[in-house]
Image (cartoon, rainbow, N blue to C red):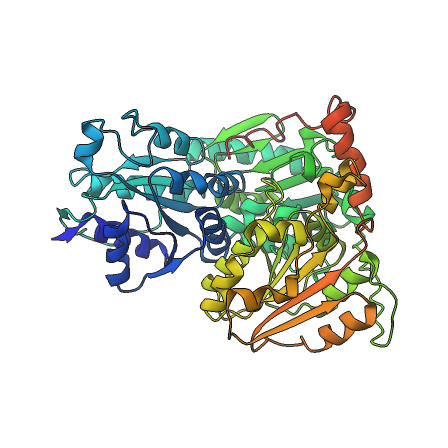
Length: 571
């Protein structure tokens, strides 16, 4: 016999979980003891539950799945924001909540971490809003419920919620007869045939087909299938912002990032000029071209989790992988040429220059500093706009969360990425305002021996909000921390490289020493003018202000439905 807690850990291990993030609490410590004793899974403490959820998100994007442990009430509620982001952006996280003993809940006793009203399902109901499956374990149901919930989360690539009462964690159950195999989605053969027929008709006369990929193409690891269409059928491809890192951006098939009216011309021409557009795992929302994308829905083939579509027709239970295999057989070879995005000219920074550093010069320098195989973690706001303006080196993974758009995500996500792939260089680019939300996780980087490169863009506040409304309003200003000195606060004796730069020459000299993997954590405070914006942000700010306050753009989306492509909301 094994315990319920050991059964849960064995199933997590089967799916690839090797680290668990979270914090101890009096209702979960029996399970934490079991984690500490379990071979093959390491407990990774976090500074708070919000950070734990963001770290798990970053971990899952590289490892495929992640897990967090919190305690009933305050602990689990603190993690809800991160789970909501994972729900929005299709990241599988197993949220395990240490609950009160079963007898306490059955008696509706007034206990701490509750509202004192005996309602112990209140937080489960909240968890239900940000997860695709939920359960409260007992010794009787653990054998079936653990597998059910984990399978649903794996198939949907979204979070799940497991309440593990403290007394249930140690109760005995029978060990599983076999490992838990990652489930494969079911494909309906009749729907697949109908999809192929509709797709064949749309593609029959297509002379300018193209591909657009989003984040779900990454989650379902569709690189090989998409690559076959690009090479064997000679199609161009663009990515949405959440799909960055999926395509080798040095490929002649890559035309750039597509973001509706804000796209650079080669990407916009290839995507909006396509007479057949295959959208693989895309999500259109206001920051990703929903209101400015000039796309004809009748020419779009959409591949998402729950269904595939051709125009308005929806074909349930036709998975992206099955649809791509079928499309390969009926896809025409493209003869028409296309343009590719020209990378901005990389004028090297002058190491002797005393000119104040500007956004226009910063991002070309960042592009030159990146190396193949890096994990790039740009924070929501200024960094997300900056990295949109250059091509990535091959084999670069990008952890970007624009749909949920919660600032503070990037620092703990970078910590999670470092736990998932300690063999790779992590480059974190965050703003000063974002860092002040979750700066504590730098201490966990130091404690676990991680060696990321951290760029802190210090422009005195929330510049992304300044771009929207109130560029000189005091509520967008924040306290001016000594960002480069933070590591010395978090770890007194840890070796750290700390720099403060304000000129082109200073940044050039620092970047010259970052050609390879650092031998220690490196933090660079980059001081910038609060009114200086990266390319794309001024126009975005005007558009966002119009949507949020004047309802100009959002009243008349050019082509796409309000909810994006058919089936998108179900994915």
